[in-house]
Length: 323
Ligand code: UFG
Image (cartoon, rainbow, N blue to C red):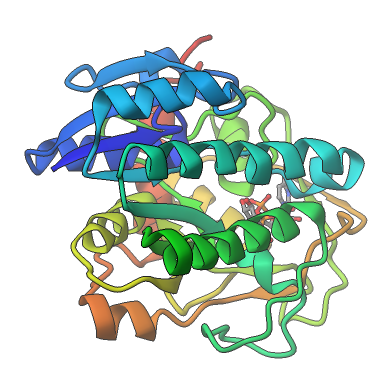
């Protein structure tokens, strides 16, 4: 297939583009490089530097490329930032996304795989979270992802744009080529590995008084390669659907740090801090629906396997993409 990967120079988009190329698909990557990196663009892909805010530009790009499908990874994804600057989130994740959808409709492109988030569920009453749980976001980031999920339903109904919304839990790990390098790094695993690399003196634990077995937050870490495979399965579907993507297992912050100690053989000093605002204590998915309906089979579920892949990448690229 001809696929346009929007946001394909970012962490998750770059690995998905790599897998699509490995499977023989033709890929064009559109990215404005605000969060993405030129060095994360797979050399086998065609690269278009462009911004979804540029409504005419994106319309021209989609009309020129006429892809069979679009994968949409572009967006802003920091919860704390969304609490300070909601406008950025509603603009980037909703208004700019609409420019993409309208360009698709105009060019008769009727298939999209969309990066949604577990943040659309807010504070779930229990776990694991399945697709029937109420979606009640507690921050503008989650709200913006939920709004776009709803917009997709209307574009399907009115314009026949088939969608797959994938609600990621905590994407982690790396492929051989591409890994996690955010300009503003807030995520746990890369922050812990920076300490292992000697680039930071210690890692901070945000909150040790949660109602969890060791007092720290529990998250469902999913290997980026398993996440990428789900996108490829999403391309083959004939009906629109939304799926939660996790492993069904949860790891606490302390367990992640212990896994990093084990994998790296480094001491990794910690400092215990107070809670980070907006962190739900426990977010764990059940992904039975995508397993049942699309035959998704995650292969790299063990936390140590995920951390090992990230460690390999960070050792190889200690300065990330260096831009
Ligand atoms: N944490 C630390 N120290 C750090 C970084 C994180 O203790 O240096 C803790 C956080 O407080 C949280 C856990 O580690 O309890 C995981 O934090 P991350 O920032 O790695 O991930 P989040 O669960 O906050 O974020 C993920 C996705 C977001 C998404 C969000 C939904 O990365 O894109 O889940 O809640 F929006």
